Image (cartoon, rainbow, N blue to C red; front, side, top):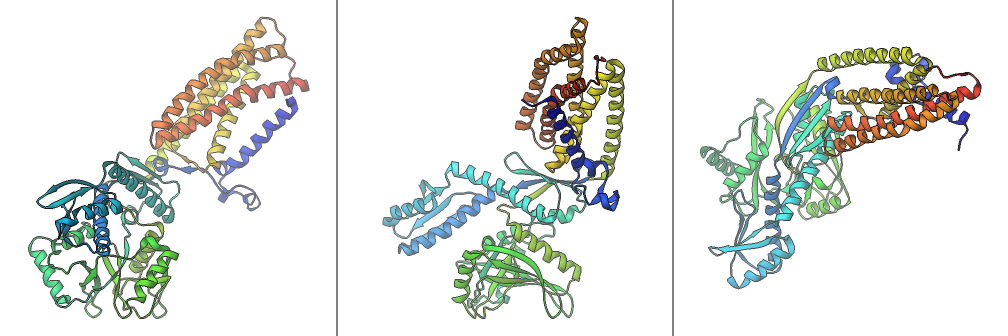
Length: 567
């Protein structure tokens, strides 16, 4: 189809293009002359966790709690829907630690209507009746869907947060039904990484209730009652979990439809920390799901950092309704069960607001907290709580040793192969050596173009590719030798040697492709990386051994540079 000259020039062109792509790997741009750095690509080959060090985390996702929270939301929905239908309930609650919703009608004649509303509006199914209570549960298939969806959403939220954190080429993968493995190459501050990844970032706007008999002193009496019963927050434990348990314990003592939360404050005169309790409405019309953006802002008076946010179109409408109907009341801004502020609504608010962080702490600490809160709000809230089960900080020394040893083994192996091919096959061996080098060049160029990360398994894949490429060239050279021994002319021996070796080489490469596809399909993490490098290397091994070397030989024969086959 194309002339020998056209194919040869195409080969030269892709070689030069590949050299340009991998130039930052061979010659770092920051060490190149100024004029050369302007024409070289800026993107090099990234190194993985095993080569440059970083943080390795294993997280457990509390998918069961997602189901419990789903039932709690259904209870609020059922109560609201039945009020609209003028149907009275005697009692409705979720059984502790279970997804069962127990409902008791004030009138037994309303039971069928209640069951119909629950089935239609929540999708929960009737299970049985016990002690006058109708029991409903989530469908088994919906449970599995919500568990998987919670895991997928958590992975996506973690990925968004890590992208905001500025980590190049993180590895985030599911492990089983409720675990996630996170690898962050180059990240040494594991504490901050854990803080950003694990923060639930559940933002809610709740109205403050001023019910008679439930002032701050009365609320603290209730908190002390819980403390005497052994319910007290311990440093290092989950604060949202503690608040959930505290509110469950005080449910009978608090007004219906309310909850207790605290605002952490610092006394400006003494510098002591204290907790101010608030009685809040349980339901939240506006949440973090309605955010469009969040960023760090600074006060005009003292330059103190805060978090400003903007609502999306739906959130703006909800916020207008909430604030417009409650002017003069306090609106608490709650993040992860912490009340950050509870300003009085002075006028209707629509599309923006601010989270103040208080005073009395070092400026650097406030700045870091503001940046982290804005980051997790932009990245999205986690649908489920995370537990860090394993943490490892991998130092760069292992990676540096691996790189040094990898370079030594690659250079030593390559030199031995090159010398063997030159001595045993002479000029044809030289062409084969060029083909092997081109194979590696094309492979690395593709990895750079696709912004891939080089790991130890990837290096193993490159070395295996070199072996396959050499093997293919050995098969071709031996076939050509056989044809020359039979007395064929160099041009005929060349054509017949390539034609007869092709199917043997193709068979060998197809078996490797099958292995690579299986590893890619069922492998995880670095195994997939090895499979990708292997599959790309197989393609280029076939191209360089079967086509590139043949084009080079034919071009030189046409030019008269080769009179006989030196093999």
